[in-house]
Length: 218
Image 1: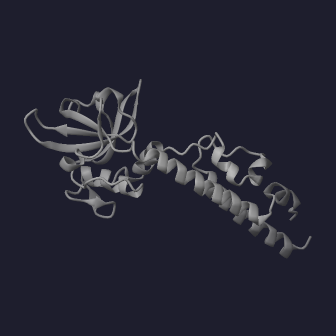
Image 2: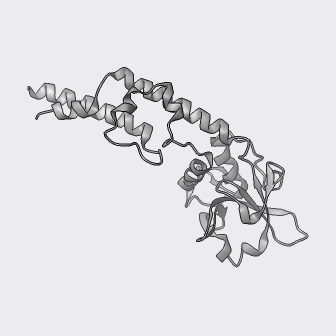
Image 3: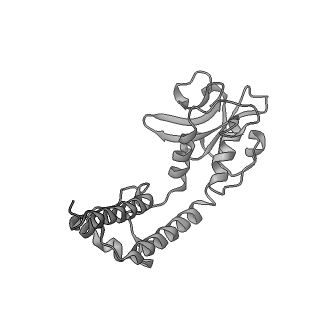
């Protein structure tokens, strides 16, 4: 095999592998290796069980991209910095979930949930005292045996804190709201439809990446 031919095949392999990776890198569990049946799926992709789009998990993961961004009063973008409600508004907007950019009015969005039963993606609101107005909002990252973890924009910037171990924030907890319950099913359906479309695009390439890799000789 000529060197030019080998290089061309390598370029095709890298392109196809990168395309496939961009599709499956965020799946959980990961893309099953050596499963040629997946390359033949079209609409059947909508019924597979290992690909489970979860707006809550994806939203939390997206929010973590902004860890370390500095605090900015009134800030609503990573370029300027975030205040507390600016962060939650920006993250939710990315997932087409409409919420107010102000913490006090964000409290009017969604449905109330028990603080002990919050899930990732839920919003927790804080007050400085029992008679004061809402002054802060944070997004739940995890609520399990290890603690109640939140991501929020504070004077320290965007950070993750264990609320149960925070002497400052824990006494100020006021209420929690679920603003995602109306969007979870729609998000899952959209992601599955996108997945099926990408599967068909891979199908159209008519390339078996495994065989192509074995055929390369340099």
